[in-house]
Length: 177
Length: 159
Image (tube, rainbow over all chains, first blue to last red; front, side, top):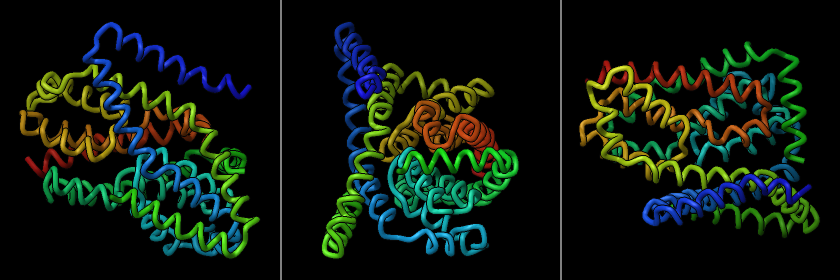
């Protein structure tokens, strides 16, 4: 069963090897890009999982609920934003964190705000964006994204419905056991 | 650089945790490994796929396709490439700047950056594992639509 899960990456590796055989230069480029993505992954993903493990065993559910739960109001929204913005790393790094958040009783809209903030308002990336594309570009994008993330969180929560949200919480809890 | 800080903080907290309770720390590490291993196969496949995809696309062609006057097609291509690929920010921003210098339009580049960050087609299998198909589809669709609004606004203001 466990080995079966690795069929997908093995198939991909076979395709890449085939390309390598057909066109050495393209194969080399592909591997160098995969390598840099892999380095990016390694630079944040393993510590994220360790931090999550620590959070899970040390921080009680009640504490998280009081800051980010159903009754957390504006404070919860701002905190979710800041947590997402302080992050580093690709978006898929946010998913396991969001799952633990749900397990610990964080409000659904706050989870969505966290993911939204992570996806596009990360502070380290913002600095880098200003450097490459100019202050105007980066600041304007941020200014449009902040209300957009809030709006999308609200609309998503309304669209998805109570029952589905419960199912998602159950699945997320299962993923972070 | 940021990675070093993250590792350092994690290490520090691990040491504190170990001092406080050996048993709980081991439990935390076990959970960490299990959660990591759960998405590892998808992650490896995704990284291999994206490397191949980007290697097959060539930058000069992209610049032309995303030109100021490329209109609807340029927007479609920018959003498709941004949605499908997964490029680390420290590669994406300089690439975007280079494309702009080569004549790509600001709306197209804003769309590319926005979809790149918010929409994840290749990471769909990972996202689905955590949030289920419905939320994953809805979130990505909305982010895709929103990216067009961001891009249009930025194109209007920065032009």
